[in-house]
Amino acid sequence: MSSSLFDKKTTRRKRTRQTNIETDDSADYQTIVYVNPLSPSLDFLQFHFDKITTIIVDSSNYRETAESILDAVKHKKLCNNIVLESKIASSLDQADFILTKTKMSVNSGGEVSEKIVGFATAILMEENTASLLKTRMFLYIDVFCGHKHYAKVGTDMMTNLQSIGNTIGVKKIKLHSITEALGFYTKIGFECDPTCKMSWDI
Image (cartoon, rainbow, N blue to C red):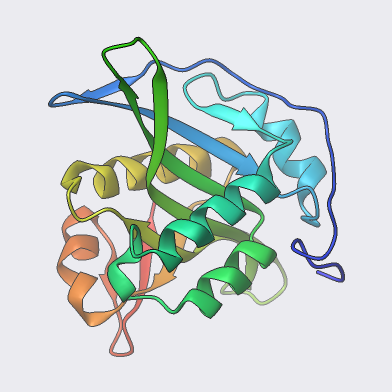
């Protein structure tokens, strides 16, 4: 991307779709996709995201959400120091969209509070096919972080990413896993090469 998300403020019309709130024990969650207004794939994503009815799609609050995620990482509320803050900042700057899992809580006074308990940064990429004459898209997950106290969130986010991949027409999700997370990804269906680069046919 030629412009930096954190150097330039961009405003776009908010586009949302209503979703059912998922329940995990006593916690309510919302799944929200924030589309990067600086993404080179913006028009393509917005065209396909119009078809999604089970996830909220937000095209106007990417920058604010990215800053909230960085603040949570800085204060050790996300990622558990596994991913460098600078890596996350760079990924948020370059991602085509962010998928977030937000915990919704209501206090005794009826006020609703929101807290991001998981997020993933995603980039649409291309690879050569076997014939080398055509390319095909795949979804690359650059950063994938959940809150350690909400174990179900990671699995739910992967299910959401699979659904998004199917909607936009990709057949494969790829990522580079840390050693500690290999078991999580292989259980879902990812295959791992010796360098921990993982691929999931969806």
